[in-house]
Amino acid sequence: MKLKGRFIFHYGWQSLLSMVLVLLVTFGAFMFLGFGMGEYEIKRDFARGGLEYMGDLMDEGEGEVTFSQKYLDAIKEHGGWLQVLDNKGHVKASFYTPSDVPTRYNPAELADKWERRTESNYELFLYRGSSEKYTLLYGEKPKAEQWIEKAKQEGEVEEGELILPEQLKKELRKNDVSLQVFSKDGGEEFSFNKTKYSKDQYTLEDLTSNATYGARYETDISSRYDKETGKTWVVSVPRNISIQFPYSDAQSLEEYFINIFIFVAVIILVIWILFALWYSRRLTKPTLHMVEWLHNLAYGKYEEPLTKRMESKAFKKNGKLKRSYRLFREVNTSLANLTEKLRYNKEMRLRIDEMREEWITGLSHDLKTPLASINGYAQLLVADEQYNWSKEETQKFARTILQKGAYMSELINDLNLTYRLQNDQISLDYEQVELNEFVRRCVISFINDPSHGQHLHFENYQESIYVSIDQALFQRVLENIIANAIKHNEKGTDVWVSILATKEDVFIRVKDNGSGMSEETKINLFQRYYRGTNTEERSCGTGLGMAISKQITQLHGAEINVESEVGKGTTITVSFTSVLHKAS
Image 1 (cartoon, rainbow, N blue to C red):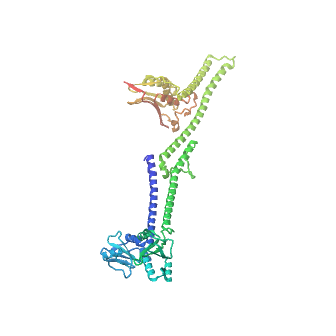
Image 2 (image 1 turned 135 degrees about the vertical axis):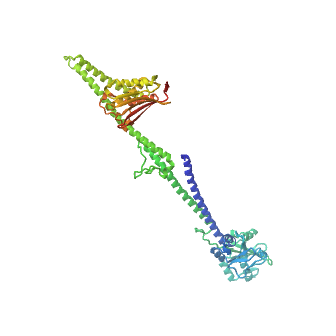
Image 3 (image 1 turned 45 degrees about the horizontal axis):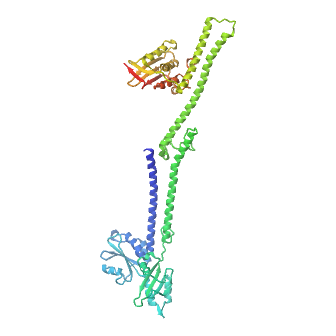
């Protein structure tokens, strides 16, 4: 997977994971909220809220209907009773049912009682939940009506004012019951134990809404109209709700909502903080490592930042990337390669500087030696005017001076040539030459000098081959290669110079079966400041030959390569491509 795609996938699934965690927390919070609201509704108005929960959660296993003990305890606490009816009106289960409650109902009879078309001692509530087989019938005595009847029966009217007995007053105070009587025109005639929820005058909405939507109000208000007197009796009974919300100390629904909101907000905040810490650590750890690495490279410290244990931060011992660094695989790999290359270049630069110093030292010695010879012979010639040197002696001195001067001139010319080649200050004088003849002449010049003691062999190509080259410079290349094969091998070594060709390329190959060269010598063979020979004959070469040969070869669009192994000889190949054409 490419870096861009890996970034999208990596950070995409992390964001998705954090979103899933937040959704799970939110879902769990809503579950707690729903459970708490259920508890609240059961406590506040069991006849409506609790009955609905019981209908949805009742167990109908093996034909027997059962309920959670928590709901049955709530029925008992509210002073109610519960029956489970089948579709024919038969009671299949009952809980806390008084003796005056029927065990079988005619559907029409039950409908009349529920809609209060017929008198009943109980306030009835019906619920048919998820079950299609059973209907729940819940009943409880209407407390408000009990107090009204009790006040009518036990109270006395004196001079138009209602007088309640002390025992009844105690009962009303004990149960926090408020009793009010209103005249025909709506004015309050009598009140006892009024609360903050009691009003001096009630509207139609107050009485009907409380009767229909009682669960919305803090008090249960019931009213009865007396046809005989035209008076209205109003009783308000507080809904004493003491609820222990799940995992909360809230005492009201509003407080419970606030607690849930704070809980969810805190959990989401904690998740995001943990995610941010994990995410930032996962992102910043490899990023800071790469920045530190680049800082090292910028200041010449060519190594990866290491741990306190001097181990790699990004790579394992087997060379593989650690998990937290795999996202930036290409960057870390590139940095590792760059570090290795810069370290290698630094080492090579130091080695080249060292070789340059050695070369300059050797070059200085090469110049001093012929200068000393020239100076010595010159002093001999002029040291004693009374001594007459013979003609043969004078010529010997002159030849030595000329030889040393020629060597110094060659050394200076080579040094000048290599710098001109390096700075592209030479233009080639191309000529079309026949390659077989050109190489043969170079080889013959060495064959005619038997002093070296090597055996030279030439193998030409069976066809004429024409190339465009600068003859003077390219002759220098061949002479340098052949001279090296002669100079650095023992006498009796065989040296083969051959020309090979394919459909597109032509090769000049110089091969010997001599001592070969080490890996270090092979790598540094074409360096300007490398001197791979141990010969003491400084006058035989300048140490710049192979560096010059490579530069000239590259100017011709050709390549020069070396193959060598200690004890098995050396092969140097010059190959032409685009500059080649043949003629038969």
